[in-house]
Length: 202
Image (tube, rainbow, N blue to C red; front, side, top):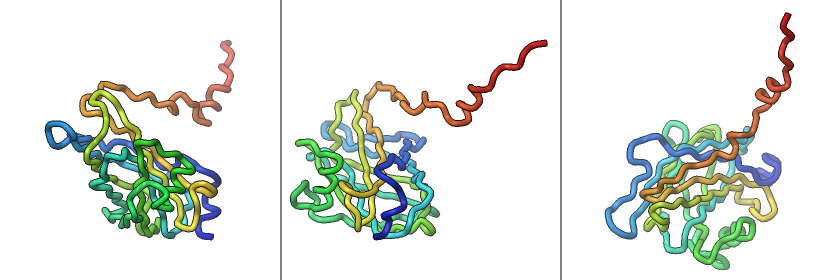
């Protein structure tokens, strides 16, 4: 079964960071029910990734439409995302049903799903992403989380291996500051350095 041995269990092996460019994210147009247009940089940290057909899910609000979702890889090559119809919540969409079983879905949420053919040799493991939600449902001073989950088409999110990533979508006037919970963890090198005893003074 393709991809069955490439990773053990679910792991947060997709890192997503905001692309450092002007007006990112943007919130067009003015007035109520604005969109959000966010550009990010993502990296798949898993070392061994076989080529194959993927299924991809993103969790958004019921009222939101994914107006644009692009993943650009090596040399600007675009991963062709094919919507996995119908774009509705379970039980109409078996991929969305599988995602809801594994990760849950709120009464005001839905999973939007895609399939794609992926080859790391030609596409790479570092990506630029473009996301447009229309409308964007978030308090102007709040933040939202945007989750993406990926596995092979032959596997199930509820039973098999997958990777996932989480991105923060801030409200248009959000004054929040992110806390990096991983920053406090010591790296192996730091731990080794901490164990070294100071030399005795002569």
